[in-house]
Length: 186
Length: 230
Ligand SMILES: [Fe+3]
Image 1 (cartoon, each protein chain N blue to C red):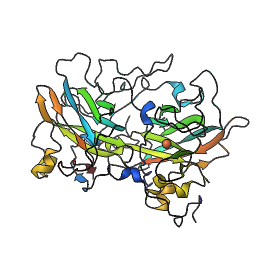
Image 2 (tube, rainbow over the protein chains, first blue to last red):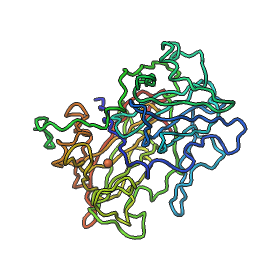
Image 3 (tube, helix red, strand yellow):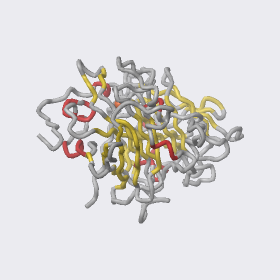
Image 4 (tube, chains in turn purple, brown):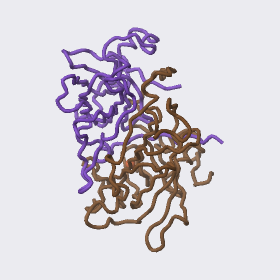
């Protein structure tokens, strides 16, 4: 018999001492010359910042490898403290909690073989996490081409300047801005 | 009335926190065999120390409360064990208070309990935590709203699409039918899958009560093979 999946429940407001970890948004190895910054805010249907969201990112390495690597959440075996990445290995995984203004910052390397970063959004009030994608510019891509221009624009990061991309997550449209496209996987 | 005392007739309040945060548009279905989300992050022994699964030994002293052993298996929808993947838990202390600055519930903090733990699943997909049973706590959803005792769980599978964040409840808790968060899960059978079972076999004499809770990750995976990944 096929087992039935365990239902999802909201992450709630109190994950902050358990899940975020030092350097969680620093996927790029320290000082890597190809490092790009993705930054933005998470906003609700009033356009208000969501200050207790957790964003997770998953992406291929620059060489296209999707194998990932351990070491995103390293712990000190002596005292048990969270010490984060070693600054060298590329794990492909990032985790950032939003700040009081709903903002997050991710520093990573451009993914190889796919024009996007995968994002999982969790927050108090969300019954189930949401998936979306940060496209680093318009791309010839089956998902983007299936969407009309207004919806597609919610997935394409805005280039602020060289190496800095802006990507806001709108959990709900606020009248002036379109709700971000969220994904399900078949 | 169903097995653990949940009944629909008492009609819990709706979960108000969701109003302005829940998307209105339907999800866009991605059916692309090349999607990055069909693979996922990996974790290893560097990410978790052996003591991380024992929440009663993270501080110099022992936390107050009812010590419990909590174990189970993590499976994918094919029934295959999810091996070597990360499970993280967090919870309130025995008095129902989180070690979080935003939690100002008028209940004591326990200097010997932080309430966060993690472990990797073993070759059979098993996890194991030692902790204390959390207390119920009040929250502002509606007047006199109390969360039933619960432990928050975060899990990774072989693919990002299998990501799961959920909450585990204790059997027989009278708050279960009144809780808008548990009741946000649509059908009773699915709600039952969030309630652990007391397992006398798992209890340790003179030491800890045993609870068993198995978890099934949904979502497709590109790397689903015999026995899962790695
Ligand atoms: Fe909670």
